[in-house]
Amino acid sequence: GRASEEGRELVYVVEEFAGENLAQIVPERALKTEEVRGMLGPVLAALEYVHGKGMVHGGVKPSNILAAGDLVKLSSDSLRKAGEVLRQVSPYDAPEVPAGISAASDIWSLGMALVEVLTQRVPAWDAPRMRPPEIGDAVAEPYRRIARCCLEVDPAKRCGIREIDEQ
Image (cartoon, rainbow, N blue to C red; front, side):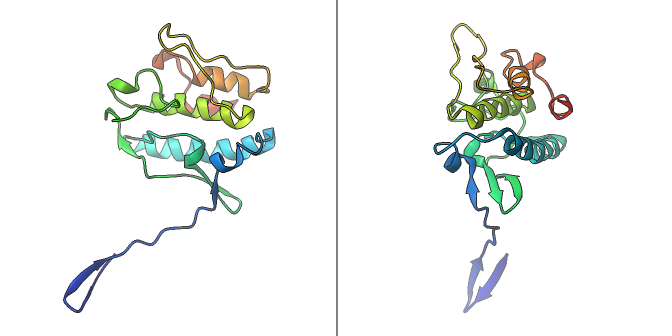
């Protein structure tokens, strides 16, 4: 909002306190499968909304998945227009991100975050050979299947939000 006081214009922002993010929890312990189930639905709903508006999150990772009481939220500070080129690439970013972000690159990042919250480590992958990350046995079904589908190197072969939601 805006206000004027003594001839000066003031700008103010009111934000909701989000509590903690998953990056604060994961170093201490992996999430339980029921916790992942509770996290995945709201994150998918947020991505579906964002993608429906022609936007991309561009930063799906544990530090941007927030817990506010019993609610799970996805931060909005990294929203971008689809096709935008990111200045910095993170370990969560899809192989195609240097050319521009897309809904498919958000799905890749979700897969990376999903594996991390279940195993306490970001999956490593062989970028030069364009091989997908290894998903170990520590990731239980259906999350192993979802992660594999999210982490297809070819963005055209990655699953969509509805496909993930149905698993």
